[in-house]
Length: 157
Picture 1 (cartoon, rainbow, N blue to C red):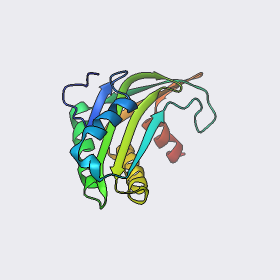
Picture 2: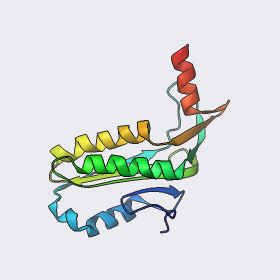
Picture 3: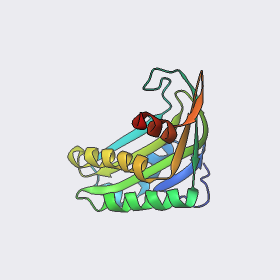
Picture 4: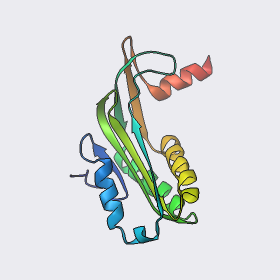
């Protein structure tokens, strides 16, 4: 599997089809720090078929500022790796056009035990969504819109 040029094994921005969860788990298990782990927690984000307002989703499109996104992912990873009991953090997001049910993001946290990995997994996902310049355009049966714009419009009204 080929990654976009500036991706590392631990973080990356990839075109659709260039990375998979099984491949990332293989990479993780080859990591020398993995021997310290007793738990692996994973999150796989998929395209949901219905919006929070009940509209039918037909597809999503993701765009990114690659250099800035990779820097953001590296910072998130470094911060979370510093937490007690954490051996590895991997964050990989796919970009392009995706149908309902397709995988778009993988987050993996390995650590000493489940007590350490679950909270870090949640922090990684929340920080990814808040801090990383990745934009999502949602296509429904009646319209399309950039999700950040839609969220701002809903908050303003």
